Each structure stands twice: as C-alpha cells, then as structure tokens.
Length: 192
Length: 397
Image (cartoon, rainbow over all chains, first blue to last red; front, side):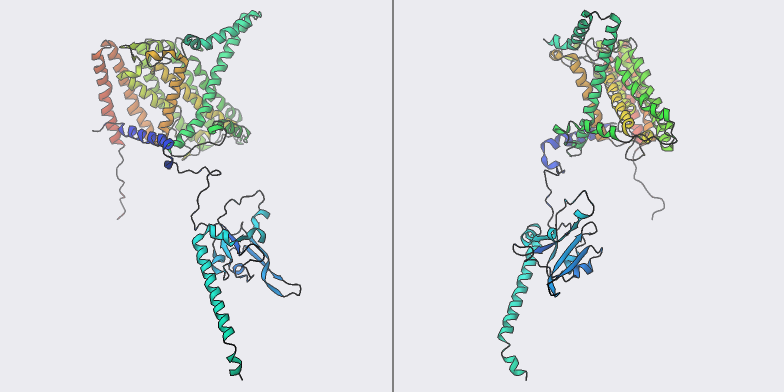
C-alpha cells in the first residue's frame, strides 16, 4: 500500500528542477538563439554545389573545363552549361555560362563525385531564402565561384585530400613531361 | 504610511468622486461613475494579468522543457501578448456557411460575461469588494456555471460534428467537476458560518501562537477541501491535465473548431479570466484571502497579498500543466465521481467534526482521520483500478 499521489509530487519536483536548473546551467538549454548564435555545422554537412577556383581571380583560376559531365549526371537536371568559344568559334576549356538552379537541386552530391577536375564541391551556406522564387535561386557563375581557401575553411579534411591529389597528379604530370622531354631524342631515330 | 498605501485605491476613488461632487454633479451620476471606475479597474487588472500570464506561461513551460520561450518581442519577450493580440485581430474571422450565425457570434460573448461577472464578489483587499453580497459564494458558482451554456452554444452553433462532440465532452467534464468544486467550497462557508466572501476571509484572520496564520488550508479538512477545489478548478478552467475539451494535440480543437480570429481570442481570454476568478475564489476560501501570512508582514498592503497569492496559485496551475499528461475521458469522469466527490464529502464531514469537537488537538486528530483514511483507501483502489499493466498480445507468438 503506497501513498497515493506521491508520484505526482515526484513529477512536480522533476519539472521544478528543470525549470530552475535551466536558469543556472547553460548546458541544459539545447536551443540556439539563431540569428545571434550560429550553429557550428558538422564538417560533412552540405547544402548546394559551388565551383572552386585557384588563386585570386575567379575567371582565370576556374578549375572547371566545361566537360559537362556534371550536367549529364545531375539527376534533377539542375545544371546548365554553355561552353565558351573564342572569336574563331573554337571551343575553349572553360564555361561561358554555368548555372545551378538550387530550387531544383536535391543536394545529392553526384556532380561532386563525377567531376574529374575537382572543380565542383558542396557548400554549407544555408541562408538562401528570397522573396522571389526564380532569379535569386538560379545561381550563375559569379555566385557559384568560390575560392579554394573558402573550400578549405568549410571542409578542411576533404579539401586537404583534394589538394594532395591535385598536387600528386601535378607531380606525375611533370614527371611524365620530364620523361617525355628526356626520351624523345632516341625515339625518332628508332622510327625509320 | 502603510495604512495610506493600504487604503490608496479607496482614497483615490473617494478623492475623485469628491472632486466631481464639488462641481455639483448629482449623486446618482457619482454612483454610476464610481461603479464604472471600479468595474474598469477590476477588468483592466484581470486583462493585464491575462496578458502577463499568457507570456509567463509560455516562458515557464519553455523553461521546464529547457528552452528559452518567447524572447523576441520587447524586453524578455514581455510584449508578446501585444503581438499575439494584433495577430488575432487581423486574422480572418471565419463563420461556417451552415452555422447558426447569431448563436455562433454570441457564444464567445456568453463565455466572457460570466467570467467577468464573477470577479465582482471577490474581496481584493481590506474593504475592497466591488459588490458586497452576503451570498457571494452562491453568486460565484451560479454565474460561473453560465460558461457551460456558452461552451455548448459554441459547439452546437458551429454545425460541425466535431464541435458538438467536443462540446458534449466539455459539458460532461464541467458538470462532473462542478459538484466537488461546490461541495469543497461549502466546507469553508460552513466553518466561517457565512456565504459572504468577506466574512470567510475575516474568519481566517489572526495568528495562532502569535505567528501561525489561521488559514483554512492549514487544517486537515481545509487542506483536503483546498486540494479538491484546486483539482476541480483545474477541470472547470479546462486546464491541463483536464484540458481534453480542447486537447489541441489530439482532437480538432473541440468546441473551438470553427472559431478563428478575435472570437477565438475571446474564448481564450475568457478561459484565462475564469482561471483567475477561480484562483481568486480559492485564495478567498482557503488561503486567507488578503490576509498576510506572518504578523510582521501586515505592513505590506492587503491587496498586494491577495494578488501575490492569486499569482502563486496560477503559477502552480502552469507548473501542473508542465508536469502531468492529459487524462483519458473515462479516467477523468471516474476521477471526478469516484474520488473527488467522496473526498469532498469526507472534507465536509471532517470540518463538521472539527467544529463540534471544539477545534482543539482532539479535533485535529479526528478530522485528520476522517480525511486521511478515505484518502488512502480511495486513492489506492483508484490507482489499482487504473494501474498500468504490461500489455500482452493474445495472438502474437
């Protein structure tokens, strides 16, 4: 035979402790006061893709060579690319137009995985709301291009891997070029 | 000095009326002006309390759940009621096409009027009763019962099956809980020997041994009656854990389904003012009304004590809301009829025995036994009846 109503008193004590405790222990409060306090995003969080450029000039350092693999692979077809051409109509290795419609993009990261030039990566920017549903959500080249330094700041681990890979490939290429430069002498003689 | 603050509201009114009188305003106009000022002050104070509670309730509930609560509008979110008010007023006022338009419109009004009318008989301080009725308690419950009509009006006029069902549940609940509410109130009236709220407060004045207040809640029968009154008041005011007429997380808002905008706000306001009225009644009947809790604290004006106590009781209601989950309808009704009602009768009997046994130590023991034994028996049988057992599935495995 237990004392009826004792459970309710215990419950009241628990709620009172939480009510008082939240004023003294900051750790209890899980809420972030959003505009003033920003969440620290986990490193692998992602929102929408952006284009990486090296150096200081976005146009000159653009890694994208307009191969259009991402455009073809994109499941919701939100990437739109027009290749740049010189005055003579010869195709250049850079895009003239590179648009991503983030109202269509589903953040699947397939573009990032298929890109052979480490050019497209996922951003962490999440404050993208706008009053118009068309123009502000269609990101063009100028809004998509972000520096490699920025990429390193948002995804440090991934960026370090990418940089190491680019460097090793660069070295391999140089080594091949050197070998090629060293070798060509005997080969023409052997040809005839 | 204290006497001046104590009597300040009355003195200011008297000075103002004297000023009007010196301009040769006839007496009947003075009486009307006096009445309007008193009514306006009381309604203003309670609507202010409503506004304050609506934000404090959200903040307290938030703190219990380890959140911040509203803190955007004004300092500490204190202007939140203004924002809510603007939102409610500017919302579209929908009336269903097949609704009984007149009754649909009248229901919030009928809900609001009794909630405000019952405020008239509560003694807010020494000599501060808007209407000195010698049957004030009777008036309080008679007028207060008017809200039940409003609830059914709202449900019926909406011409919506959910509204009617919700209203019927609300009526079942309110009528069931009216009985323990009234009987536990009678206990206090019986010991004080009067149905006048002022007399009941006066009967709780003075200090035993020079420092123990003689509030009814500090006796076995008074404590029981106070608890029964409190629980029944929670149910009458549709407060959690008895808020299943509205039950926002499980029902379509019950009788409020077809109400929106300002009419909904009126219902909401009436509910809160009703809650304060019933808190005021609880304070008057059991917590000594405007009496100070300790002799040296009598320097604080009596009306401060009254409102401090009302706010404390309102706070406990919010606290209970943050603690207990909502009851099921059959548990709710069984609780009213099988537990609260017998307990209120026990308190009634206990009070009578306490009075006739001479109000001494023997009376204490006797009255304690009369409420304690039924409490243990009823409470245990009740917990066993609705004990949560492990659910077994007959056809599984």
